[in-house]
Image 1 (cartoon, rainbow, N blue to C red):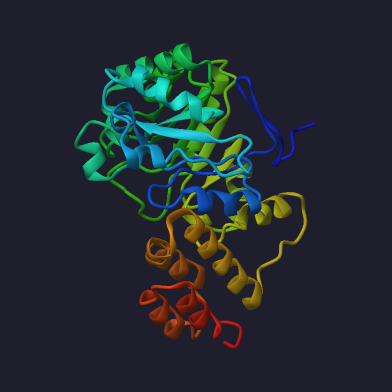
Image 2: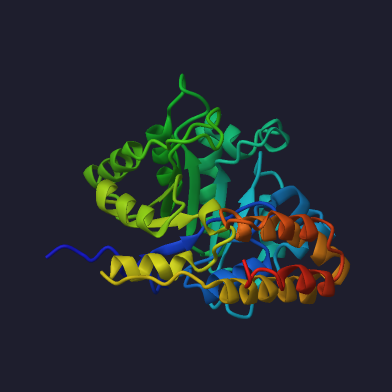
Length: 331
């Protein structure tokens, strides 16, 4: 009998209740958002990517990224690096924060990251990922995962060889964003590569979970990816922005049930909940500015909401948000 699409998961010595994760997203997966994702059913959450260099220097902004939601009984920290020279020092500073797993970012396509040799530029240097994984495992005893892309560009689609390099270092999990670096976040992720990677690890007798990412915007997308690709789990990234309930919605669908969509009143309450978490974390002024991008995502696709969006772009206090959102229920 085949395993159900939604199921518990073992990643080395870490047991996770299910296989629907929140992906790391720079500028988004902070403590407030991860709290909402946990409330919305995410089985494992990842921090924004944390610079190994910044961590080794004890940078204030870097350390701030390591704060943890009270709901995160298990959580993962994602690191990005371009060398291992300061990795051990960074790990010594990281361990007191109590991460359950460490992930290495080999997928970020942003030039300010890749120009240093980090992010998806690491895919040009398979020896570095082998070394980095080995050091982290030896130094911490924690499970290590690697998030990668298909390759740097269409001429260097080396995801299988790079995955092997990660496995050579002892990687306990692989997550493939099914695009090349040059594709960025363009439509039509190549899900067939997920199936190929899963088959590769099976054929080579690696009992490590394979996760997929890319074009997961609706609950049905999780079911399709799991069914079509035969992988072990999925990571919602952009699909969770504006809908941190997507994890429970996907679980309901995988259980053969209908999932609920928030009413306008419930959506208003969710936005305010998010804002209040942001205010508690950052203070009112900073939170109200940072919340604008989230508000736009929450209201995306809602007819006649343009006037509310315009008000929220200018909102600088909680009261401004409440005044603007009062009109949401009446649309």
